[in-house]
Figure: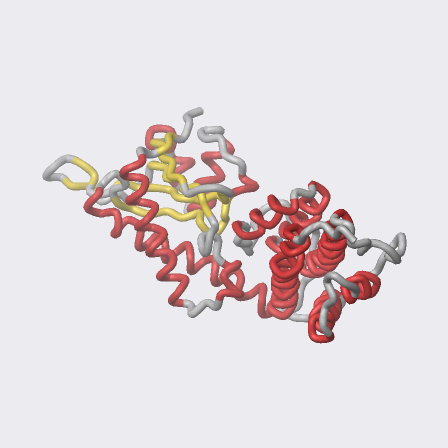
Length: 329
């Protein structure tokens, strides 16, 4: 088994920048609104690892004069990377120069064969399926980077758009919980900052499970979970104030409901207004509005609203509960 090699930084930076620019231009072609960017795996602050595999193909363009192939054939795929963009390369031309591999007709089949033959080691659960592509060209060629990347980026973004378009236009079909092939991609950057600041392992675990459900289109599970996260975050806000001597947990039942939390938020020092109370009531109504009869687009937008609500709760209330001075009275 060969190992992927991390491409040197100078060429890697040029390649990644070029591919990303082409990719974002194609995403913009679809007139995508911010709320729909989760349909694409490499927008906003998301990161990916890019993998390029040189392999055999029977349809090379052969140059008799120079006695060489005019172009090489490559498989390409990407995986989710939580921290940074990276580029990896491997030459499997000799390993794939056989009839069994040559007769495979799709990039997905070719990659599956390479993995099954243990020529590479990759976590298939992290592969972005819409990014599994093939192309002809020259990989290590500074003068042809844009040519190499323009087709890849177009295919990648097009497949992500088309795959999610059907899902969002139909009612949700009840299926078994998937383990791979997620279609939606959360921009985790600002959520990671939120989770690091809150620093609660229980809340982090609950919230990450909601993001998993979101990315796998389990909208009912996502909405129910986000509603619970909303209540949990409200509790953490109250606890922060209580730890500063404000007695904000006094009167809160042992098994509080959303209504109980809203009552506590009416009290000083939080003292939400009637409009702010309406905001919280709307969020909890949204949690209960997701069902299997809505279209995928409607359910996704309701979950987006809940995610925005949690962000707003964190920015507007949690931060204040951390920064508040101790109550000395």
